[in-house]
View: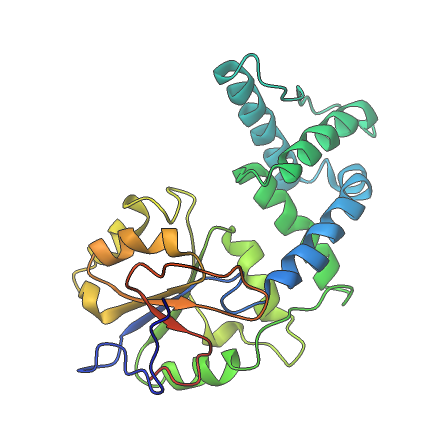
Length: 261
C-alpha cells in the first residue's frame, strides 16, 4: 500500500540535518545503469584491461579480484565459478591473464554479484568514458533543486553500494552541469551492505547528529528496516522505471523530491 503526502516535512516537527540518498532508482534512473553504464562496461573491459593493467590502481583491483575468486572457489568448491589467477608480468600485454579476468568479470556481472574489486574496476572504466564525454550523468530533473533546497538547512550525502569514486562521476559530468560541490560527502558500503545494521551504525552513532535528524532515501524496501531500527526517517522512492512495491512495510512512499522539505 502506498503512503504519501502532498507536502512532506518529514517528521513534521523539524527538517532533517542530513539527507542520505541512494543513487540507482533514487536520484538516477535504473535505465542509466542497465542501458548505459553496464553495456559500456562489457563493451570496453577488454581494451581497458589491455591498456591499463599496469596502472597501480587497476593492478591492485585485479589482485583483489583474484583473492575474491580464490575465496569464492574455496567456499563453494562445486560452484561453477571460473578460476582467475593474477600475476603482473613485466613488459607483457598480459593477454592470457586478461582473458581469464574477462571470463570471471563477465561471470560476476551476469549474476549481479557485489564484488568490491569489480565495482572499483567499473569505476575506473566509467571515468575513462565520462572524461571525454562518451558517458554523461543522467539525474532526475528534481535532484538539482532538491540539493539546492536541502543544503540551505542541512547536509546531503550519497550513500550507495557503489564505491565513492564511481558514485561521484554522474555528479561531475551530468547533462546539466557539475553538482559535486552540492552533494558531499559520498559514502560507500564497503564495510557492510545497506541491508545490514552495521551499515548505518556509524551514522546513527554520530554524537553531533541524532538518528531522527537523518532521512534516508532509497528505492529498496529491504534496505530500510535497519535504518528504521536506528531511528532514522525513511522515504521509499518510486521513480519511473523502478520495480513496483506491493508492500511498503509502513514506509512513506514518494514519487518526487519536490514535496520534501
